[in-house]
Length: 178
Image (cartoon, rainbow, N blue to C red; front, side, top):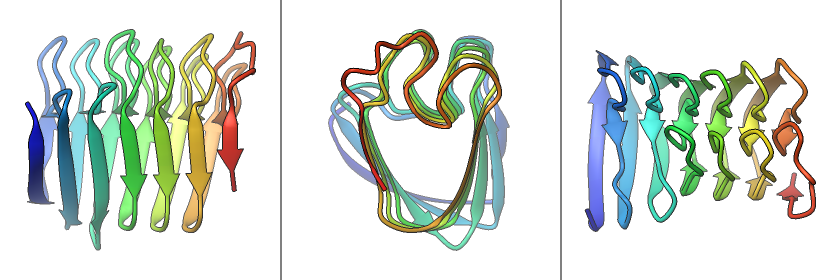
């Protein structure tokens, strides 16, 4: 944990075991992820597709694509099992993030969302149940969400904001700027 790591992935296809995430940024660490080709990562039961816990950060860019699927109670990109997310920045590429049951597509699981900044790229974010497509998990505010560019499709399939707070949130601390 700690420090910054630069990683380029090309045509990666990984499914994690139960409780694990195929790409797991540790608290205190930063990951600069460059996408080439077409990749897919799937969190195991209770694992995020790309786990970025509170206190960690990720920046995604490049010309490739990635599909990140979260496991039960986990985000596609962001918080793992019952956890909030750290700082997420998307500058380019095609990013598809599907939250598991009770997880945001991009953001928190059954926890809040940290800072989410989208500067570019093509983003498809989907939550299956109670989490925002981009933002907080169930009962959680959306955190700080800044969208400056890109093409975004955000779909929340059940009782949560497409961009913002999860279901049953008091919606008192949302800071969404588009």
